[in-house]
Amino acid sequence: MTKIDNPTCSECRQLHCYRHDARYPKHCATTALDEGERAELAALYGGADPEDSRLAHAAAEVEGLYYGKINRVEETVAFARRIGADRIGIGTCFGLIEETRVLVKILRLAGFKTFAALCKVGSIDKTEMGIAEDLKIKCDSYEAGCNPVLQARLLNRENTGLNIVMGLCVGHDSLFVKHSDAPVTTMVVKDRVLGHNPVAALYTVGSYSARLVDHERLKSL
View 1 (tube, rainbow, N blue to C red):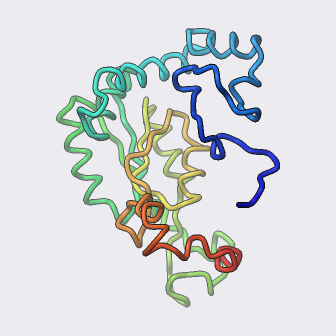
View 2: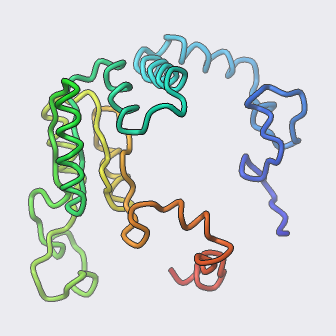
View 3: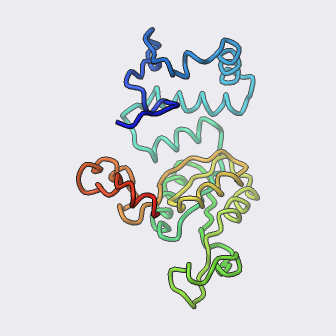
């Protein structure tokens, strides 16, 4: 097994921070936390930062009340209600617009106002974005690039209290979160190969997805 010079939580085999067990590995970030930072974090969640406190308390309440009882769509409804977000934005992938329509129906039934922004909004050709023609899916044709910055801006203009990611591409989701004024939660993550269920690759890394641990192949991506 390869030695890791600076181990973090992924190398821990104890995970005792959950129950505050006395036994911790030497590299544990919990034991490295000084009392000043511990007090600062407790105060932050306790109300020193009203926005962080509001989100943290709402998330904890949803988890405590509904753990293992409701699905993520329902959890999002419960969370949005607890943070007072009556206006919900959705940054959606073109390929998930039908699922977005269903989500919008559910959110409206729950009493929220919804605003959706499609990934291709603005319809700017990829070459206008500085992307080479040979990097298009179909070369020598008009191909609108994803526009997560505009998606976020459109939802910002609607003064949404919570924004939802619906299957935005890897990286495009990063830009959307960066430019969103409202807190962002994810409903669907993009995985075109695995039906938007990327964890399946991790479940099958010892069999069907063995290529994921091919060092040379990973270097070539």
